[in-house]
Length: 94
Length: 361
Image (cartoon, rainbow over all chains, first blue to last red):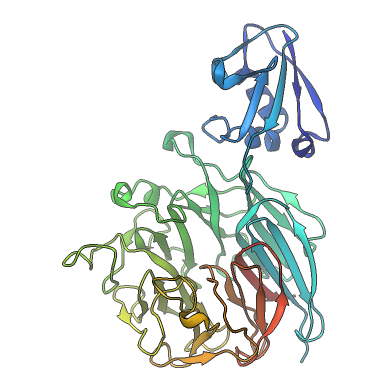
């Protein structure tokens, strides 16, 4: 199953400049499994998305086909062929 | 003799580097490096000759990262993350302290972290290992967070014995290991915990010691700026004696020892109530007799200074006469090129300053 991850500008330096990353994994696939794969490919990106317990960073939002993953199943959210995961920094930074 | 000096300034929104090539008469500022990250911990490690900068940057969005530079900040290398082992169930909030180890072992560097823990690297910072004896300490459940978070913010490696390490935590107080980190004991005898009820203010541990310092030539003599109280130990931390008589307030955050004169120390007293210098008088206090008496130093420092200086926002360089530096929460940084006698503004209008470190380079 192939899904696409869209990165904001502030994170692209941690993924060799990529703005979108295709991730292909044997299904069924969860958001957490995609983040595991990103962590293997780009550890500097992976740790900016989740801490070492694999907990999502509080002020990073993950939209799964436009829906906030925290309103779905969080990291356990099931993805489908062609799903777009858009990563957006949330409201922080005083 | 003119020295080239590097002054690194960690702020809440990035790192600035000031360099002086004319005996600290003037400074050139570069930055922000690592913008929009809070820099609580930095070190300028000169043990190899070529200075290496260690910097922890924490982003409100993306968490902590750890970077080094071997070219005075022109380029940075993001290093492998400092991580808590999986079985701890903990995650790194940030590094509060990088402490280079003994001079004869330049690959050893320590990191004091939030949550309270100490990590040791024996490969020049490529990898760090959690010192389990402190993490598994039975006192841990009783160490509480202060306003700034629950952190091991001070790490003093013994200059000659790699098995000995003294740390301070807020809260928790001073702890010492003599076996390389396997076992730790609290070492707070004589230090008051004023935030406890009367009758319970001298606990074995649980103090909020804001900073500890020592001189490498006299490692058994230590100084502490406590959350109320300034203290000296002459017995490697086994007991502490109050030395704040002569200061306008015994509250403050930093504690710094002169690089060449182990009896000379610097403090920046702030009022307990206002958390600013008493009366708004910006004064560094220096003792030349290990805290028995104190002298206010204010030549060149501003009036009506309603700001605090954080625990790591004061430092010295290794020059002779020594440079002394401090940064404040209003983004001003002051430096003295003569042991603190006279001061000049090094930088202003920066974000609030969290830490400074300086070295002859």
